[in-house]
Length: 146
Image (cartoon, helix red, strand yellow):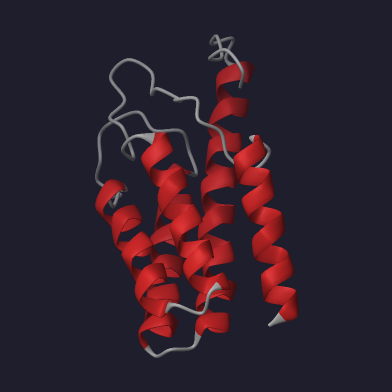
């Protein structure tokens, strides 16, 4: 549990300082539908899940997971919108890891819930990194602070 607490504290510090997550909004380009809702709301939900895990409070972790699920739409392979290649893969990974994390939390297995939730955060970060990289390679202007 000490390792879980240390990792969660590290992630919380990075999130609060802007290293792992930021409060800036990354708007999709013209004609591209938003994949998720407001970034700040999702960041707060991530912190809620992490605190739920750190405090060994499955109900609090699940409440944060529900906020994430409610603000991240499931993408479909049949979408005609011009989403960058790989976004669908990260979206599927996020939703699968979130479902698995919730299963563990519902069973009271908070360490398993945390371990799976790390994959949720990785899917977010890697997808955003990929989209930013694709935008910079295409010559698109990046939002300030990205």
